[in-house]
Amino acid sequence: MAKLVAVTACPTGIAHTLMAAEGLEQAAKALGHDIQVETQGSVGTRNTLAEADIAAAEVVIIAADTRVDTARFADKPVYETSTEPAIRTGAEVIKAALAQVATPVTAGLKIVGITSCPTGIAHTFMAAEGLEQGAKSQGHAIKVETQGSVGAKNSLTAEEIAAADLVIIAADTQVDKTRFTGKRLYEASTKAAIHDGAALVRTAIADAKVMGAASSADQPAKTQQAAARTGFYKHLMTGVSYMIPFVVAGGLLIAVSFALGGINVFEDVNKGTLGWTLFQIGAKAGFTLMVPILAGFIAYSIADRPGIAPGMIGGMIASTIGAGFLGGIAAGFIAGYVVKWLSDHIPLPRTLAGLKPVLILPLLGTLIVGLLMYYVVGEPVAAALAAITGWLQGMQGSSAIFLGLLLGAMMAFDMGGPVNKSAYAFATGLIVSQVYAPMAAVMAAGMVPPLGLALASALFKNRFSLDEREASGATAVLGLAFITEGAIPYAAKDPLRVIPALMLGSAVTGAISMVAGCTLRVPHGGVFVLPIPNAVTHLGPYLIAIVVGTLITTAALFFFKRPLETKENLLLTSA
Image 1: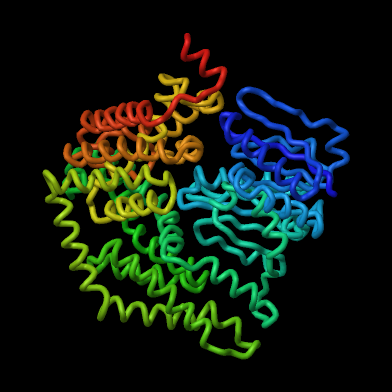
Image 2 (image 1 turned 180 degrees about the vertical axis):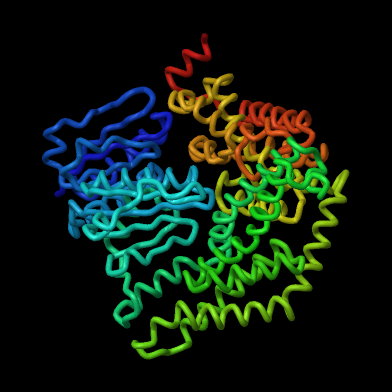
């Protein structure tokens, strides 16, 4: 018979909390084990675990849908899961927890990590927090470097990497791993770190492989890493993440140049003026580099550093022949897979292996990609882009409404996930082709979910927990800054009711923006870029679209969400 202690918790602290506790208690009894279960929630803590119970326990089970403080369990093996498995399969949860004790994970490891998402904002830092809490709950020391379009933060030093027992990379974009050669390394997505950081750390400790340079002994690790980084979406998002700063800088400088010199500031008659010079910097330099950067880092995601030169050169060719961002995407994927194939199929003696990444691969890759872009791929892609651009520029009426509804709904569907980022990448790419209306619809629609939730939690308090209401101010700021991920904590707790409400408001916002002919030259910034002259056209209707969408989301949340049956909310309702 094993002695166990457990903590169950859900956002309201009532139904799922008590059902999970009962599920664990019945399962433990059936298996012949002794268990003490503490329940936590908005109504307070019940059956608080005594220090003697914790000291005598062989393992601690945390079955929770919210964060639980595990500091008092620092010296105990902790098994973490959500309430649903405890409710449905309590016996399996207990068996898994005891199996963890039977094969204990070494405590006190030194771990370093990297998190990265396409924009380097919300998911990046949420994943870092998940890793940090997951490692510390198991007695490991960890430092996490965050990477994104804003640069690297909390950077890892060479000494810290040298001393590390394990490297964990939780990223949705390609991350340079050359500095981790010889280290045990494990790769996953940001979602895995956000959802269950502790489980990711346990998996990494068990499954990490040594990252090598070129020896056959390192092949399993290289195979695993190659499998982890495959996928159209991840490669595309890597390119987009590196392209975004060029779009932001170029777009803002163009907007400022128009504000200083008028809409015709780029004409030769204005040559030498500040406005003309800013336009040259933004349009002729910043925007010119966007497609090559996009293509180069798509190729980098697939083939690492040897893919950058062929990819960027292919992207530059796409720009010069009028293939635009679609041609850049094609060039990036062609370059990446061509260089990867060449790298895998050109054998060289060890004495000449150093020539491959700096001479052979860039030269052959650029030759093949350049010829394909000029003779095979370029013209069809340019024709397709011209057709899409003409259709988008001439859109009005029902077609504009449909596109706005679609883009808006996509932005709210997974709030920073693949569907959201697909709509964002589509709109960002069109900026390169001087099509700005979809970007306006996407940014407005992406602001609405956090704003609607913040307003609803302030107006309809009995439908939100205390934690959700206290977070509403920060959620509103995230919405104003166009960080849709601020809605994730609310949606995760009640997805079937919250997500449809968010999609409804965002879809209407996108449709209003498209029908009103609003355009946006900058791919990020939220309301903080709106005061810049010419950054947004039709500013009045644009603000109306955001306000209307926010109100619709708020109203939908009122009808879709049910009041929470807690003592606190009953008092709020009666008041």
